Length: 105
Picture 1 (cartoon, rainbow, N blue to C red):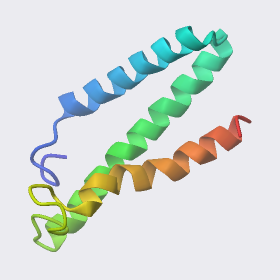
Picture 2: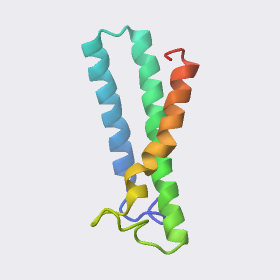
Picture 3: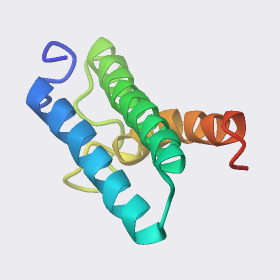
Picture 4: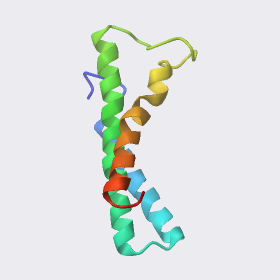
């Protein structure tokens, strides 16, 4: 991951995955979910978060291959519009697919 995007770390990935699960637990408790519902949501969140990281790294790999620092200059001081949505474009289809697979749609 550091070759593709030097600002990324394994600690950040694991921290994000752990905090996602903490969020799932809090949401499940506040929503009164049963343990089976909590488990399904935890699986969906883990897989979606993991794919989100892959989307971010994939976009960084494309930029590195093209020797670009930013994908655009539309948002000054940021890596470009793609840096704002790279994780989302990878994660959203997986999220919807998993909701469908588990019968939540």
